[in-house]
Image (tube, rainbow, N blue to C red; front, side):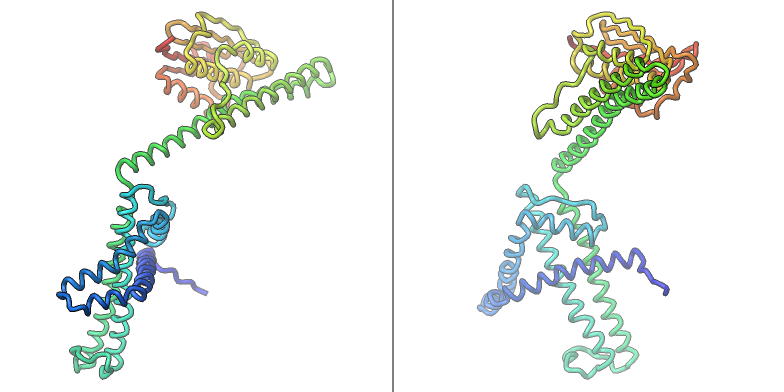
Length: 402
């Protein structure tokens, strides 16, 4: 069986017609309910234009009141996205301001009015075209200039049918242009929405960095220590037991770090998260690396404990990422770390592992996270092999206040 799929243009036109007919159904319901008061106005002996205007007001005010309901904006947004624009993901929320209520009310009135016109075109125009072509003597055509020539009648019927369809399609196209503008918020609202989206993305990026730097470091320790314990199990049970204890400690620290990251997720709902580690915890960080078998030569200058908290936390995470990359060379991993908390915070970590291939550790996410942290604090970072082929991570973070 051969399936015929309508073209995208035809599908969009059909969707616009569905949107119009939804408005036409609402227009029919409103017309049935309000036909009596509108008829009273039209037959009350008032001047014709005034009577028509008052009748339209009587019909339009309840429709506008319906559109002013907060939920009407969400409903119209779903219909507009699915049937007019095709952007189903562009959802809008309920009306939250008077301006949003007013714009939605205008849209609902326009939807009902255009739907009523489109429904009238179908209900009146198409049957009239069929009768004109098939039964020119039908009483339905009384008062209309019916051509005597059958060919002319067929041409007139076809023109009437095409005009009804085209006029409805033009109404749909007009609403497709007007509706998104009426549903869109003001400039300030759109800026607020954009800022909220940026904040969400920044929060996700922050969490990704924290997970990679903290939990990734601890899991690297677990992996190294578990491998060492497996190799030493038969030949050196005491060393294997020490490696297993170090694995337990690293796993425990991973849980603590994970709890910290989860605290970042909960900080807006449950209060501030637990404080993140900083350079005051450098000794504990180096101890975990040494327990994993990394030889670390450390040189510390200045007063790391006096650094601003944001700089100290970033410095800790940068050192942690550098040690994590060195750990990937275990066994035999070695490095030299220089920390200088002077006018600026200077960090230099040199991977001195014999035979290591510089720049190949990790998937690049850790170094990218380091660059992002340094960029956020307006510092500088260089990473790559030196003249001796050793991988060097060199970071300088400005200290604006003590």
